[in-house]
Figure 1 (tube, rainbow, N blue to C red):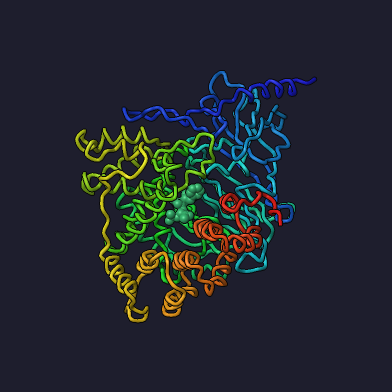
Figure 2 (tube, rainbow, N blue to C red):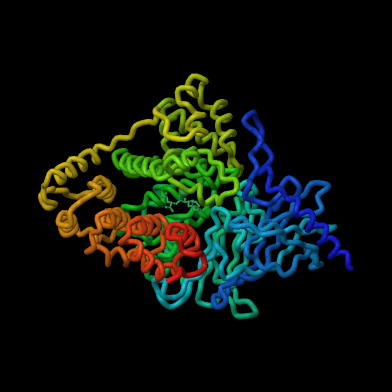
Length: 637
Ligand code: BES
Ligand code: ZN
């Protein structure tokens, strides 16, 4: 028996003992430097051996739906560490070596649902590098492979990855916790005629060809980022500049439209930098993906990924870009140490999103966004009900659960409301100064709720203010504290007057709605009564062309009402909507609404059977549960 196998045996034992319990990072300096909570969603033990750099050489293969290649990892280890533990899920690891290609022992532990498995690797006697050779599974949860028919061009296939929260481990073998920051570089080999883009710097030169005739794209991310921000997309991707350091990537037939929709992006960056300190990432580009992309946006550094459903043609949905850009401070610079503190990413970001839009479009506009956000928050509280009331806390307890379960509007909107409530006590100037200092002090570091509270105590709030705000209740207790700062939109008050007129019988055409913004339309639609007659629905639809709207948010708000009232004339348009894009925020609630009625359930199942193969795992994961669809299969007839 050779030495390697013996070492692998010892490693197998060590895996059994892996308690998924690691400090996300060593504390920063100062009194606010409290120890960070353990990350229960990673097997890694970064205090013993930590990945500091990932160097990828990958070839995505559209025919087999696999990415294969290698990940060369730089490891920083404590004196007595003899192994390093990585997170992997559904990866086929074929070989692990040191930098010189000498095999290293490795062992894969038991796999758990959504967590994947620990991969323990014996550290080399010399050097701090290990090389993992592997390929991904066609079912890798992060990766979606799109047929040409799912693209705008219809000719070439497309693929993209989505790492947040814990999906990076399905395509990169590394330590996959948000507190374990890593720099990265990559070589990506793609078929000629296609382009690869990543959340990193790249050279503008034409790609080289490798020995197999593949185009070789090279990337480098010099800042240490959490691994959920490593991202890749490959397809027929064109580029169009907006400003000197900004631009859009999209399929050729989409790129012009996208560039004009996002023309304000430089203004957004300037506004954010003026408020919160310099933009530290170099370029800021936006990749518009095919409609299967499961999110509105994803804040991949230097390259936000975005759904095409925000291309409304009138720039009415670009607050989503402000949101993803805001993550360049909250989330990408200062990062939730664990997914229990997801609100530190999303709540701060939503608050900043509204501040950026206020700079661009003025306070009345931002107040509409804030008030829609409040409605979303209250709907989330309602939906969580009493059973999951604990999930109305900002700081969550996701132990034993998929961190995706923590993704609700509580993190976004209760989080943003908390900061607005602080603002109402301290005034804007003090809060802005504090936030600049916070991003500066904790740049490229993990953050926890406890650390934030300590830092606020030191640098923002007097004892009396902390009590007046009720900081602890806001963060650690369920429900919405009574001192929440109010939000009032005058424009929405005017919309409500129209709703009242309509309720008391006025025909839609007599309302004289004039030039409403998308946000006013959304407020109008959401404020309509739950129960409406078929004639009155038809009156709305005929007068305002709701079922044929080109605005995805308006369509979504309208379709919810059409399902609540079983307004069948709108159902062909609803079906087209569900079959033409896979954004979870739209498709999951619509399927849930349908499935909640006896007449709608068969319709939901029938549409989902056709839609499901076109959706990303993030969306099917949610909808499968709602519809009782067996994951990976089709339901009994
Ligand atoms: N980071 C999130 C997307 C995300 C959250 C991915 C949790 C995986 C797990 C992104 O910044 C986001 O919040 N997107 C929103 C848009 C935003 C304007 C609220 C979305 O996709 O709808
Ligand atoms: Zn976000």
